[in-house]
Length: 216
Image (cartoon, rainbow, N blue to C red; front, side, top):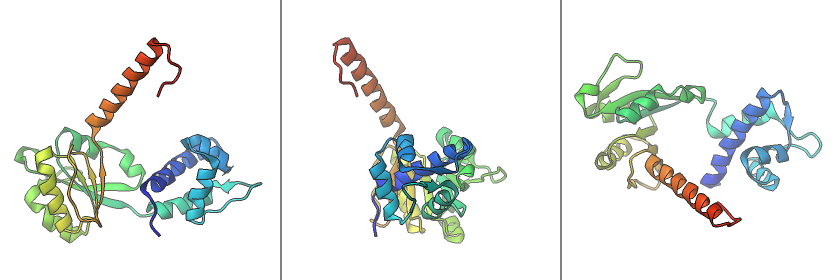
């Protein structure tokens, strides 16, 4: 069965909400609690869980430990997810230093760059020449890649990754990548996201100034 992307994203949000509930001392929650926590309806929570046969009951709710364990299995959190990074510039360096990945069972095992000044084979996360990418991916059997390179370099890097077995790409370059249908691509355009935030802030301010009640 194929599940849509939004459903899987919601599962991740449910898992994060469960962690917060556990920190507050909860051992059980109801669909209403999870719905409020991530901004959906209780019916949507029950529908999402039913797709994966995650069960609770009307009186007792969902056992948090059991629910989290099952979500971890579904989302692949029980094993360390190894990935490689292409682009060791400012964004790439920030990604390598981000400790949140480790907490979520994600490990960048190597980075690659075309700039020889950025290469460092002795750092905690080695930065290797881009020419080594294909051999490294073939040897390590990595399935996930992160692209944090300039726009004009992104497609050739994606091609290299796919040709060496990469099945999922997190793309920070502001370009739509062309990849086979069996390769999962998630695009993160930081400038576009910020641009959208700025637009809606300005839109709401103008709406308030004009006395409009409906804001975004």
